[in-house]
Length: 169
Ligand code: S3P
Image 1 (cartoon, rainbow, N blue to C red):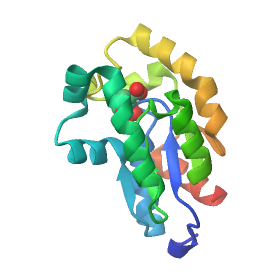
Image 2 (image 1 turned 30 degrees about the vertical axis):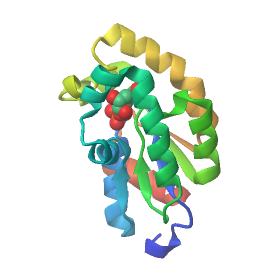
Image 3 (image 1 turned 90 degrees about the vertical axis):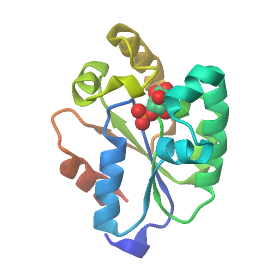
Image 4 (image 1 turned 180 degrees about the vertical axis):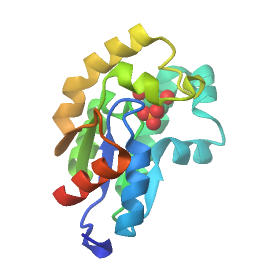
């Protein structure tokens, strides 16, 4: 499918390292629609890195900004949004996601994610593999709750996943 046929925004959710940003970018190219990475957008808006925000304002401070950003992006023209992995934690955010568009859940295990992430230093919540395993387990039902489409990313490359998403839109 092409350009103008993207009737509503598409939000990518899933754990860190699931491939949300890469898949959104890939799809943006094939569909001719803009893609936005929530964390990049948030960092520009705040003039600070995610890591600094966590250090200065804690996770709660970060989550408050994240909700503002999600609201802003949810009100925009059809576009592809790769969300931060923890966006589903707040009830409020899950409600925004459900109302705002088509939600794609890219499923990945913490172990697989670890092997895909080259630099975990930018991810305050991916410092320890055991903790990450637990966090990802806890989030499974939250991702599932908002998902219009779930894709198990195991053994698939970005192009394959992007094609699967495209055919479901
Ligand atoms: C987080 C995921 C990160 C970023 C922040 C918190 C999380 O986004 O928003 O470090 O709680 O899972 P990515 O999923 O894009 O790495």
